[in-house]
Length: 571
Image (tube, rainbow, N blue to C red; front, side):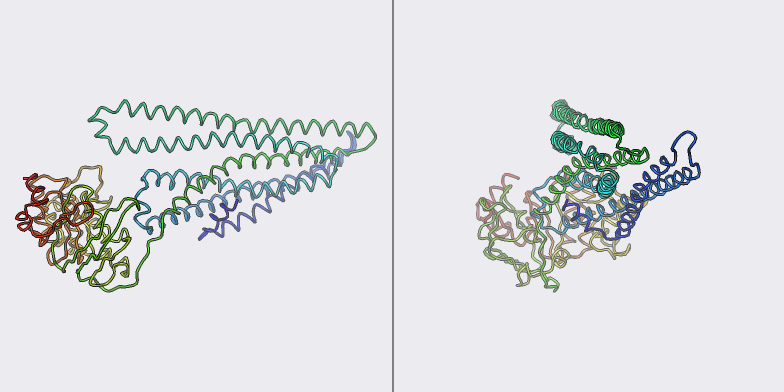
C-alpha cells in the first residue's frame, strides 16, 4: 500500500481533485448507507392490509429515494475526481521518470534496450494507473462501507450480524486462493507480453536482414509460439477472474438464506423481529458483501501494479544522477589526457595509461581496429563516462570541474549515423541553439553545403522531416548535422566515422563541409577510412586501448609499422 502512497505524493496540480474526491465520497457513501434505514421505517409503517400509514410510508420512501439519488450523484462525481486525480498523478510520475532518464549518467541507460524502457514507461505505467484509479474509486469507499455496515448490523441485531459474518472466513479463504492463481497467470501473461515486444522490436529493426536471409517464417513461428503461450495464460487468468463474481453471489445468497431461516426460527419461538428491521438487515447484508468483492478484485490489480512499480523503480535505481561541476568558463580547446585508465567492465580493461596532449585548433585523427577504444576516447571527452584513474584536462582544468552545460555546448558531435528528429529542418539545424534566427540557420546551411537542396523542398526550411518519408539521403542528412555543428560553433569537434554510410561523391561534399566546421577548432576524427585523416596534424593509432603509433600520415608511412599495414590494406 505504501507504494500507492509514494505515487500519491506526486500530486502537483491535482490536490483539489483528491480533496473533492474525499468530500464527495464521504457524503455520497453516508447518503447511500443511510437510505436502507428509511426503507425499514417505511416497511414498519405498513402493519397490515388495512393498516398502512401512507403519509409515513411516502415520506420515508421519498427520503430514501432522495438519499439514494444524492449518493449516486456524489459517488459519480467522486469517481470522476478520482479519475482526474489518478491521471494527473500518474502523468506527473511519467514526467518524473522521463526526467530521471534524461538526467542520468549515460552508462546507466546504455545497456538497456529501448523496448524494455518503453514498456516500463507505457505498459507498466498503465498497470500502475489502473490500480491507482481502482484504489481511489473502490478501496477507500469500500472500507468506509464495510465499517459502517458492520456497525449498523450489530446495532440492529447482533444474531443476524453474526450470521452475516459467518461467511467472512469462507470469503477470505476463497479470495486468497483465487488471488494466488489469478496473479500467477497474470504475471505469466505480462512476462510473455514483454517477450513478444522484444521479438516485434527485433523484427522491425532487422526487417531487411529478415528479408535477405529468408528468416520471415522462422520469426513468425517464434512470435506465434509465444503468442499461443500468452493467449493460454491470459485465458486462464480471465477464466479464474470471471469466477469471482458468481462465487461471491453464491456465498452472499447462502447468507441471505441463513438470515431467512434465522428470522423464521426466532419468530416461531416468539422472539419478535420486526419486518422493517429484517428488511434493513438484508439491505445492509448486501452492502456488506459488495466491498469485499471489490477489494478481492483489487488484490490482483494491486499485486500486478506493485510488481510494475518495482520494475520501474529498479530502472530508476540503475540510473545514477549525472554529476555536474561548477566551473563555467568557456573552453579554448586545449585538451590533455594524463595517465587515463578506463573500462566498461572492471574485469575487462579497455583504455590503459593513455596520454595525449592536444593544442587548440589541432586536427587529430584516431584510427585502429574495431574495439581498439577509439569511440571510447570520444565518450570520455564528452563526459558520458568518468575515467577510473588519471584525468582529462580542458585548458589545464579537470573536465569534471566544468558544468555539463559548458561541456555539451562547446564540444560538438557528428555521429557515424546522422540523427534527425521529427520536426522542421529549421528546428533540426537550430537544435542546441534555440534562439537562432533564420538568417543564421541559412548561413550555416550554406557553409555545410545543404542550402541548395533544402530550398528546393516545397516548404524550404519549414519542411517537416520524418524518417519514414525518404525525403533525404543519408549523405544529405549528414550535411544537416554538419550545419547544426557549424551553427553551434563549438570549440572542440568530434567526428565519429561520419562518412561510413555515403558514396564517394557525397563523401567529397561532406569532406568539404568538414573543412568548414573544423576551421580553427580542435578536432578529433575517428575513422576506419584512413584517407579521411591523411591531412590531420597528428594521427593516433590505437590498439587494445593504448597508443601503438603516433605521428603525421607521412611519418607513420615511413615508420613502416601498424598504420602502414592498415593503409596498404585499404589502398
